[in-house]
Image 1 (tube, helix red, strand yellow):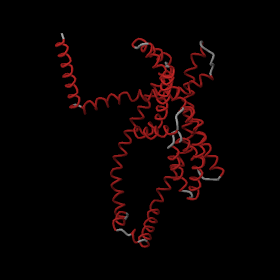
Image 2 (cartoon, one colour; image 1 turned 30 degrees about the vertical axis):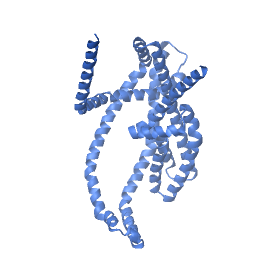
Image 3 (cartoon, helix red, strand yellow; image 1 turned 90 degrees about the horizontal axis):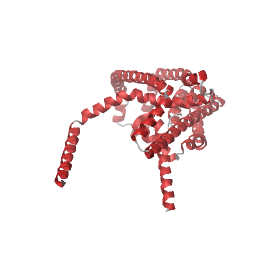
Image 4 (cartoon, helix red, strand yellow; image 1 turned 60 degrees about the vertical axis):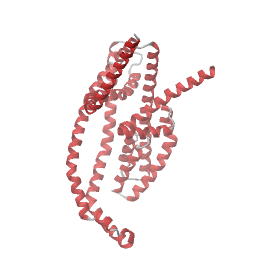
Length: 373
């Protein structure tokens, strides 16, 4: 009997080693298969994310539309009407930002493109003056690199590659447009059947897991939903406050494009910590086409308002809502951005905040238990 148990373990180890060797030999095929499976689920993942964001508005509209009604025609139309109002709210916000910001951005970029030849000529003159004044700057390698022939060569190379980049970008945009469209449909079905889906999830969990695991999963889910919801609401309010502050201040200083820059700052302010710098660069480029002095004043104003916002407003609105120290917020933004770009920056903070709350709660419980002993 002992020999049979020994051989059984040996056979199991051999089979496991064989499976691992086959997986190592076919790792590219396995990776391709996993990528295909993930691609197939992308619309559903996008739809779940859209449903979560929309549900923040839907819940608030339902609290306003007949909150005490639990039957009748009012109850039946409350969810679809709340969902429709949520779509209208987001559409109005997007339209307002696009209507205010895009025309001025396009106009500023056209001015920059039109002024590029003159800027290049001025740059060449300046470089010639520098090389004549400072001997160390008259390095032949630097002069050749900045010559007109080399710049024209680089421009032709970028132009040749630009066609490939444009085609790839169009394919990506088309793919994501389709994913977002399918995701919207999936999100609508999820929100309309939200209670039924939650009930089914609880039934499945209770059927295959112990009561202790059901309690743990329910607690983790509740903390995650609350943290993510509080973060997105707080981040939106913070970005709105920052955009209004920038717009009013620029208007008081009679700076051009005050409303447009405020919209850009408010939109990029949705990205934690780093968003204001992206919006700041866009605003500075726009103002450089009007007046370099206005651009300098704008940068100074933005930095002052950023210090006020990051030290007084952000900790009160977002910091308290997610309960995450500033060090971990910065870490979540950097790591999330490195892994998943802008999406990682948005979900990194609430994800780390959720883990932080769960770990701190567990640590407090263990320490209290040890002290009790």
